[in-house]
Amino acid sequence: MLNHQPIFVNTFARGGSNIVWEILQSHPDACAPIEETDKIIWQEAGKWKSAVNMWLSLRGGYPLPHPQKESGYWMLNYGLFHANNHTERRLNSFARNYLDNLLYTWKLKNIDHPFNKYKTPEEIYTLEELKRTRLVPKHVNGLIFLTPALVEMYPDSVHFGLVRNGLALCESRLRRKTFKDAGKFGIVYNKMVTKLLEYEAKYPNFHLLKFEDLLADPKKFVHSLYDKAGLRYGDKISLRLKAKKFINSSGVHDTKLEEGSKYWIDIDNFFEFVNPDINQNQIARMCQKDQQLFLKFAKKSMEQLEYI
Image (cartoon, rainbow, N blue to C red; front, side, top):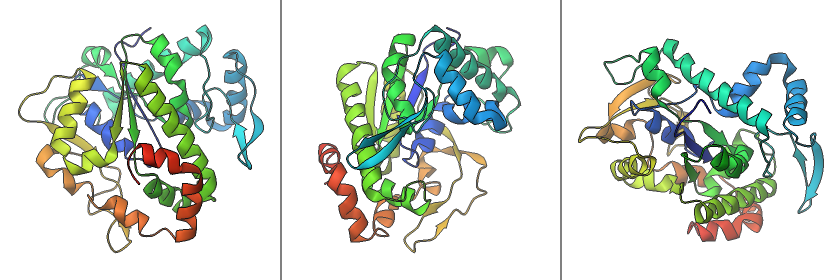
């Protein structure tokens, strides 16, 4: 494999993963492949996304996309590397080499990235330094189910599973219309949390993280994150974070910074980028009907994570 000691971030879309991902790649010894894994694949595919999806599934020894019913809802098995496929799958030799080469190639693209080319606030990576950095891919939604295959593929890897209060997540998904039904998202949430807890119990190199712990004590969270990842750090930690909009107490989705740009900050200034009350603000926007429908399917997972 081209990549050594990769650090995988596994989580829900809109689950706070971008922040944890940015914290990890702020370390000079770690570098992300610019985009989430599924976005890289589909950018490479361009307008041929559907054809590439089927081709990768066939070459990867995986069944073609097909619908299946679960708890009264139709779920589509989207293919081998699709983030909306919420089932475990194996990776044959073709799929392993394809993924390893793709992620390595995209890691090296950081040499020309306006923000990621910096290994510290003052220093820029050389190409040789970039090659030696540890890869930090981000896998959202159904790509977390690749974990068993990736543990086998990279025995020296570290995996993080990031969870967040499901009600806040559900509000985000309904607001963005990526899910139209709170019950269907409840099924997906329960399925993903169940697997993340299973992976934590099964694999010594898999660590469960809670987004709420980051909000409660950013410095303690970052120290623990770097310790588990095997990344050394000193007394002063600088973080390179991307400015994104978040829901404030007035229900406004906004940011005071230039959205999409990245800024180096001292860890003590963390809350310039994140509203510590973001969960409460989002949950307050959900109607009781949607909350109850979500909990109908996700109550067990919410209880296991001590959110209710």
